[in-house]
Image (cartoon, rainbow, N blue to C red; front, side):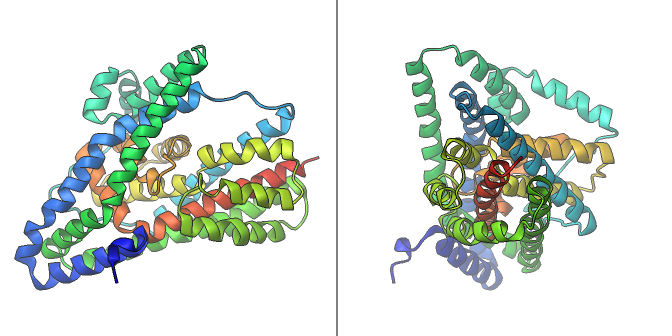
Length: 394
């Protein structure tokens, strides 16, 4: 069997198993192969700030005005944001009840914030950073600020310029796709080095982390979403929730791409009798901005990093983390595991260095076999669930 013809998920599974075995039985060789993981993380560190800036800038500049059914479209967008914020709060609650830690490969440092005010001051100064310096230092908050400001300015630009901007953003996204195709090799090196230096307990810790992520996504899909839909349509929400999970979520679980699942969601929305004027706008937009699963991933992994470094997270900082996770999730890349590249943005709230944050991203890639599939299934099915609820709104 040619493993290169397998999908990315089987390749990652094989890489994790081989890396664990080599790290356990041949630790010296495994340690030297850790450079493969370091190169993979280095490539991600190089492209992540530029990706975030260009994606958000292009999205803001090319945002289209609502169609004639503007009231319901606006309601759907508000529902997307509310759902994403709710997902971040669910993840925060479960992370507090079942705290997770990550075994870092090497020294890790973080500066715990003294109070919410100190966090806000740090955030404000990060927001006004020089754009070039923000890109060079991996200051995601600064990248986000300049991306939004430039995107708003470019809304007045000629259509040709905005098309070129979208082309550049797509080009950088393609580079990320090429890097992610190397994930099995990079993860093989990371697992080799981790098991050789820390031991098999690291992988058990990753399994616990993946379990918490999936649990948070199940709570969102089977508890929070039904409550939200019931409050809007005032009748049993579970038939529509289960139908969307079956017809949209299962497909998205295997494609691992909300964008690729847009045709499936459009066909499902038509079968459900949703207004075409509504779903033709909300489904494509939802594939970009309705990222409930991404908010969960960003929050859980950021909290795990803070717990590992002994950073005490106050109540105010927790809510700030939820807001940042929700907003940054809306700008997550459409490529598989794209939400992982936004984790440094949330980690920066706790004074966690960029290098340490990227180690968290690397751990995310190790568990992405489960995390990314479940995340995409939640993201995609929720698009149709919320669109249906708004369509049935009185």
